[in-house]
Each structure stands twice: as C-alpha cells, then as structure tokens.
Amino acid sequence: MNFDEILCLIGGFGKYQKILYIWICLPQIFLAFHMLVSVFTGAVPPHLCRSSAGNSTSSSLNFSLVSGPGGQPELACSVPRNHSVDGAAALSTGPSTGSCSGGWDYSTETFSSTIVTEWDLVCDRAVLNNIASSMYMFGLLVGAVGYGSFADKYGRRMVILVNLAVQPVSGVGAAFAPNFYVYIALRFIVGTSVSGVIMNAFVLGTEWTGPKQRMLAGIITDYFFGFGYIILAGVAYLIRDWRMLQLAISAPSVLFIFYIWVLPESSRWLMAKDRKEEAWELIQKAAQMNGKPLTKDLEMCQVYAAEEKGEEKKNHSFADLVRTPKMRKQSLVIFYLWFANVLVYYGLSLNISDLGMNIYLTQMIFGLIEMPARTITLFTLNRSRKYSQLSFLAVGGTACLLTTFIPTELSVIKTVLAMIGKFGITASLSIIYVYSAEVFPTVIRQNGIGIGCMCARIGGVLAPLMYLLRSCCPQAPMILCGVCPLLGSALTLLLPETANKPLPDTIEEIEAPNLRANAISERLGAAAAAAAGHQGHGTDSPTWTIELRAVSTSTRLMEQQHVRLVVLHRTAGTDCLLVW
Image (cartoon, rainbow, N blue to C red; front, side, top):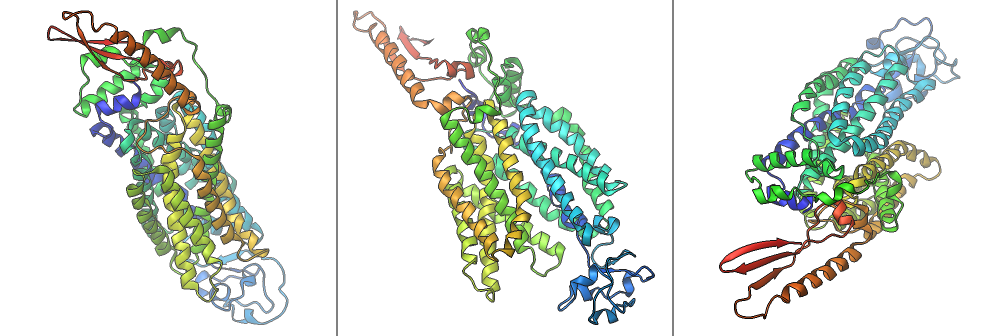
C-alpha cells in the first residue's frame, strides 16, 4: 500500500489537512510583503539637484520641473545655469554646470523617506538601487537551490522552521541597517528565507493532500500571497517611512515561533527516508483527527515489509533529475516553464505599471487582477493539469503578441491586451506549482522544485533587463513576452497528465511504468492459475473467489516490482483473506 492509498483511507483533505493549510497559508501574507515591499522602500521620488550653496527646503521647490509634462529630467542630476531656489530660472537654455556637488532635494509628497532619499541612490548612484533589487532576487535563487536540497535531506518541517526564524531577524535588521551595503546583505538573507518557506510549505501541503484535492496546495497558498499583495498597499499607504515600513512587515513574523509545536513533518518524506515509526505515528494522528481511525488489520501491515530492511538505501541528488531519458525530458520542460512564467509575469508587471495612477492604488489593482486568475484554475485543474497549463500559456502569449500589432494611439486596447496577457500568465504561474510537484517523484521532488524555482528567479532577474531591448526594437519586449509562453505551451505537450493520479515515489515509476505493469500481469496470471487449480476436486473442495489487486507496499517494494495477490477463500461460511 502506497501513501496515496493511505490518504484515501484516512481522508485526503480532512480536518488534519485543513488545519495544516492554515499553518501553511498564514506566512504567505508576510512573504508577499517581503517580495513586493521594494516597490515602496526603493521608490524614487521627484528630486532636484541642489547647489552647493543652496538652503532650500522641499516645500519651496517646484518638482514638476522634472516630473511634470514638458519637464526637464536632466535637472534632477545637474545644476542648470542661472540656478535659483524656486527653480523658475531652471527652464532657461544653456549648458549645466555638472554634477550635484551639494546633493539633492527630494519631494516628500508621496514618501517621507525611502532608501533612495536616505542614501542618495540617484543619478550616477541609481544603479545601486537596481543592485538592491537584484541582490534580493539572487537570494531567492540561492534559497531555491540550497533549501531544496536541504529539505530532501533533513525534512520539509525543519527547513520551514529555520527560515521562519531567520526571516524576522534579518528583516528587522534591515530596518536598522546603518548603511546601504549592510541593507542589501540583510535583504539577500531575507530572500533566501522567503524562498525556503515558499517552496517547502507548498511541498508539505502537497504531500499531505489526496490526489483529488492536491491542486489546493498551490491555489490556496497563491490566494494568501495575493491577499498580502493587496494588504501591503494599505500598510505602505499608512506608513510612508521606509524603515518603519520594513519593521512593520518583519517584526510580526516572530509570532510564528509556535510552529515548533504545531507544524508536522511530511509522512511521505519520512517513508521515503525509511523512518517508518515516525511516519506511522503521524498517519495515525491524521486518521484520528479526520474521524477515520485505522483498523487493527491495517495497522499490522505498517505499509512496509520486513524484508526490505537489508536493502541498500539510495541517495538521490540533482543529477538524478537528468540522469534518465524520461526524467530528463520532463525536468527540462518544467524548468523552462518556470523560467518563462516568471520572466513574463514580472516583465508584464513592469510594462503595465506605468498607468499614471497613484502608486498605492496601482498596487492594489494589480493584486485584485490576480484573484480571478487564481480562481479560474480551480475549475480547470481537476479536469487536466496538462491542458490547463498549455491553454493559459497560449492565452498569455497570444495576447502579448497581439499588442505589437496595435497602433500606439490605441493605448486602451493595448492596455486591455496586456492585462489579458498578465491574467493568462498569472493563472499559468499558479498551475506550475501544482504541476511540477506532481511530475517529480518523491525521492527528488524537492530537488526538482528547487531547480525550477532557481530558473524562475533567473527569469525574475532578467525581466527588468528585457526592456533594454527597446533601443534595438520598440516591440522587442512584448514579442519576447509572447514567444516565450507560446513555446512553453508547445513544450507542455511533452509532459504527462497528472490530474487525479497518485504521486510517483521513485524514478523507476517515471521511467518504466510499462515494465512494471507487465510484471504485475505475469505474477497475477500465475497466481490466478495456481488458485484455480484448487477447484474441481470434488464437492467438498473449497470454492475460491479471486480478487486481483496490485499493491505497492513501499518505495523499495515498488522498485522490486513486488505485487500482492489477495485471494478470498470461502469454506463453511468462513472468509479467509490470503495475501501474497
């Protein structure tokens, strides 16, 4: 009996799993805060170059000279001829006097302070603001690779708890950073911890959920991430100082310390690691909480046979993702889908964010857009993971390509198409979490998702750079946003359908399902013939009713292609269950 069969007996989404999802989803709100807070903490307010002798205050300056219609952005980085405090003379023509030796004056209309205003990350130093964002994304990448491997070795629970502890410490530390370089170092650590929690919380939920309800592992957590997206807009609106905002989104995470006592380990992982007693204790606890206590007969089975004790255990690594033909093909396709989804997701977000609206309102609208995209996947995933992924990628890619054919003056139509593209990519991004967890077998699932997240983070790092292509061709970014999803849609045809199917536990299940099925048929046929030989020896002979059922008793037994044959022996009104 494999773990999916056990879940069917104890409940695939009962009270135990619902409580588990509460623990999994709550941190997602704070993870969204950390992912998106740089929109506000790293914002660049309008600013004017201050002369070395200037004593002006921000309230006396006319910042519309650099940010308003017909303004002169060059005034933000140079002192114009005939400089005056109110900036009226700045509109005169003539060469500038060079760099801002006296510093800058910043508008406080929208933000009281940001890391840009505190450390003067403008003009020649503006690249440092981009480096801060890149370091955070690089932290996500490192966390995806490192914590994926650690979770497969030390368990999902351990990695989640460690990162929930690291997150508030590094986040609060960033709020008190004495200089820019300490700040980006701490943001890098926050990024690694965010990646560690996101991946492993998702996998933990997936591995405790039955096949029919497994899509909830990705979709429900995405909803809470979306809630965080929206809530952050309100929090940032109320707190305009970057240090206080950073503190407000980081400090409450210390409350997750109680997870030490409530967060369970994955029984599926414990089984794969041959820690049978621990796994069985959790299974019994889940069964009891779900109101489906296990029978004594099933308890005696204890899932694994004694003969596997002497077998040599296998250690799996990243190389197993590409060592065998089928696994290699599926892994490479999944990795590309992660990359393309995140590249286009962030690419579109950057492209359509310039709506000329209030930044807080824009943030909230983008969060609201994600909700229907997450919702629609609830109605499609149960039918097909494969074709849901394929369809939404096609919708997103096609909409992005169509924008390249719309004239610039029809900006409303271009914006609507871009929104449709973001809708499709957001839905596709929700699906890839669920789909990739079901494609990879248990023994390398965390490694696979870790590499997938790494590819996603590479896409996130490249998304801002994609718009440098405008200098070559104005339509190049949107062409790329269209071609990448369409290519991913075509490649999805190479993946298997996983909807309502048991999770694979071993690489052998991926590579040789036909061989295993043939072995099962041969053994069942031989056993059936042997049982039939008992019939026809007289009227007093027992009558045999044969029920054939293949039972995968464990990872090791599946590797050996062991099969159980259940034979019901009826004689004198007594039933006897014989198991081979």
